[in-house]
Length: 421
Length: 156
Image 1 (spheres, rainbow over the protein chains, first blue to last red):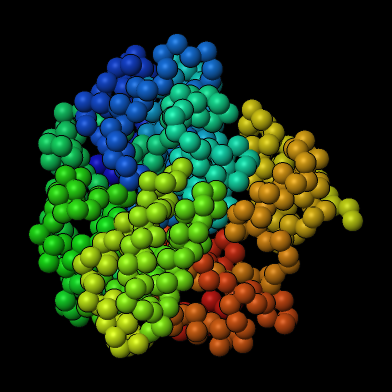
Image 2: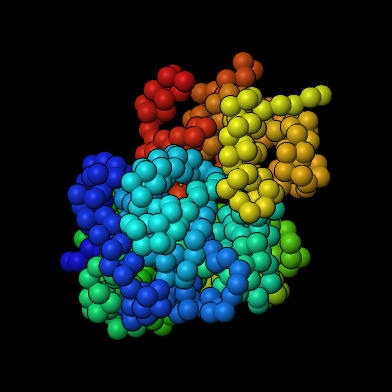
């Protein structure tokens, strides 16, 4: 199996520049610096790489949205605010091969003609931020980043920035607000960041994993990358697997890989071989699928859509028969209620109300009307706010009630949770 | 009340400010320097940051009150944050919260009387595969057992 991202994860001290370079880090620099930036964009476009933060939009196309005639500075911003429950894949890159991401940053910055890049770390990633500061200092010292990189005349300054605890800052426009020193409030689009982003200038926001793929595309060529995975979902993807499995962790597999195989081979099956009840395949925001649906699912954008869910960030949450559906959904609602930024009323109120209703259902104090109430709240949230945080709770509410309705009704009928706590 | 960053930290703050085209953008990084020095961010400190970044004190308060990691009052020296989001609960977070509560004799949101520990529960620290887990100040502690927790807390 070709490994694009995790090839050197097992190597010790990969954060040290000399070790990383022994493993091939930064070999693509001379190649791209001899190319026209537009040619780098085209190469990434041809590879079919889709953004790995969750939206799955073509990376090359996104880079192409920077206005050609702009006189303003252009920025690259790296989204390292990984905070979606179930998702811990970017953290693995930041810890195990940080120079791979820096190399990707140089490629992307050169392609979009940016001379400044900000890496936005979630506040809790203190050690990862600290490690990145060391890696950047080392790279600066030998002229891999900074002024006149390798005598090309190209300048690039990379700055590591820390957030301070707010899931919403993973939403790209909220991230930009936060980076400018404001509360992390999302902005209305358009204008899209590519046209008017950081400090009002053209800005491309890319996910850590997306950037970590770029060195492979430049080194091996777009065709070599496109050969991996499926036709519409090319390449490999990191899946961070958690929940009721024997070997949770971060796994790189080609897109289109069967979930059943990931579960049994990479993850060693469910704990005590218990029955798979449900699967959240792309981070906490995506609709849940049942265990039976999951076992037939392939891990690519199209197969997930065909199953009524989304590949999202690749945060895989495996849930077995010992878990209570109402409890899991109540936990998700608490998360979104806690993380709603409060800017839009439907989200601020809707996430809080959902949490209250789900808590009372779980406590056995709910009524049969509560299910319809939850669905009505979901309808009144989704699509009615500036950013998709409200949708990210509305989708789980609808899917959990649709697929596990009897379990919700049992809580009302039995006036309590049938699962042992 | 007067507040000042130490000389070293003030130099660092000016280095931070130089990293951005607008002073205000250094807000979060400068607030981190304040919290690193004091353990929390007082109104006096907010006034100091406002002066430094040429914004109003209300602008600084707006930011400090939005982000959960900034403490607006003093807390225990070692801030224990246990993730109890859904993924961690699937792998024993409830047990961990109860164990630490009993061990320290405090509830969530409280500090020990000697001011050594403060206990919080938090939402998802991107450590779902190594649950149950906790963060103490800047460090993650993962795949926790009672034995491991005992050892970690004793060493602090």
